[in-house]
Length: 464
Image (cartoon, rainbow, N blue to C red; front, top):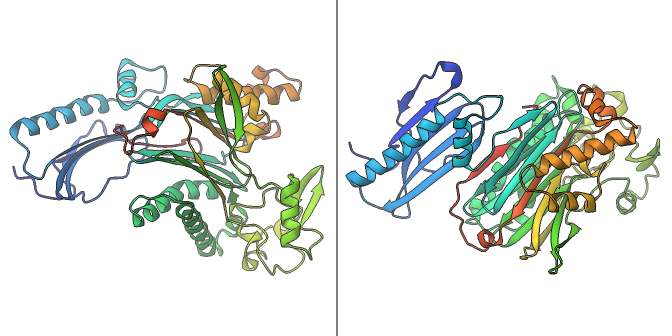
């Protein structure tokens, strides 16, 4: 059989709900095939030409995460031995992939798959969803989320490949639509813009990705105005971390937060260093910023029930979405009267311009904790860093979420076990949705220009 440039060797797809139906088909692959986690398991083994080199790559997609194994050969037809080796690799992948994934305790096949992929299976404990540990391009990670709203408004993702890692935590408000939109589009914009600069990442790269995402959501609001005017009142905070070579970029809109755990000397101690800048009207610096931007509006920030809010409505001053606070054409009927301003809007009140910082990673930088404000409402930076530092890596994110829930229960003078019995929606009176991603930093991997580890693409499953 001839292997033509740009033509797949073989593609095999399987869905659990099709009674193990297997189909083989040729696909065309001129570019990297994007990986997504879902309830389907997909394996694709393909070939493409790039820079006079023939690439052979197989990918595995499934509930456990994503794996891509790549192999480059000279620009010539593979030998019989090489073909057999690649075919055997594919068969090994299929033997792991073509099995239903259980929802209960981990089976032997689950364990083998998790070990092979390097990403633990997503598990659930009531309203808590978590992955204890997994591998990414610069080390290991742990992630968890707990639901409080009727529909969870948080979304998150980890995207990691040979040349960098992208982490996003998106805390929605007014509904889940904006956070989901950001999770679906921000990284794609980042990829496309990075490609224009041949993979060179700068603050401008991230800024442009945020701008494109905001523009896309505003266009969606316009398209749906006649049928879903409430989309104008939906928004999302947006926290992003990008590790590229030995530099960490942090971009933020709203009040999610990333904290660095940094080793202190040789004493075994750890320091908590907040890297993100927050945009919440409860911070005096943000109130000053808003007053300076709107000097003729004495009601730009209003104290209501002990909480400072922009125009007496919303706490955050920067976000994706919230079109009713950025464009006068959306601040009118038929949106709910509680969102309509009494005076004409002559300039945007909220901003989608992220605060971006860059941080040169140092060997003493041990780990990063990205989380929505639901975590930081309950736990201090120092407490969070101490919990991660003084416990095993596996389950770090889940441990932080549970610590926050224990604190929320304590504040209400109730037991944690009683809090667990409270259903979603009612839970929102006790705590917010909480999303946590912990990245452990392996500086031997970070120092390499390209990491030979399987790419990872994981998005939070709650509420999807």
